[in-house]
Image (cartoon, rainbow, N blue to C red; front, side, top):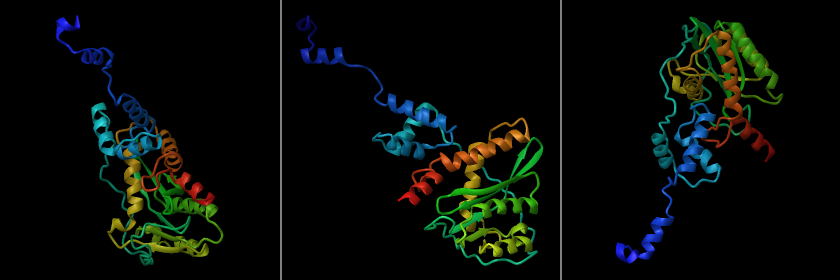
Length: 265
């Protein structure tokens, strides 16, 4: 039969035993699983990192190509910012941070700000504190009004965690809250050195700006919330996810994992 067909024996058995399967079938399944588990929050670079941790030998270009074939795309940022600056109503602190967003130990450099969400015809305000050592949200407060009580609540959360021997730099913009006498006195009482961005220069607080942008892309834009309470619960869940599960590319693990790992070593 092979002689009649003119096909070589080796060629015949090659096609007989060949399986027409996609060599990336398993990788695609993993990509889809990682993407779904993180609710579309991971782009191709973080997915590449997770795959490599799972033992796959694959680069980010291939992952990007496979994601496109699956119709998967990481969420994109939008512009929009709450501005709390109301002029010079108090003392303006020097910019001690000077865009150096790296820290050698926990609670060495902290940063804060306030961002706004419009939900169900109401406004919700988040005031977090980021530790620049591992990008962890170490304290935060949520309020329906950007008032001084929200800042007190944020500070109380921070003071409860702050080590007794810590003397951190605490950076913010020049918002009215951070110029307030009470705020500045509370920092001084806890041996915290206040630092402020230059007027109108959001890059001076780039680490916080980056967090706000990512937060809104990953859990707010395009989402629908039936009530303000539902949104607040989702916001709290996201902060837990961000601290404990979401990979920070620079650290190659989540903020809490990095802190735990560094303290153990």
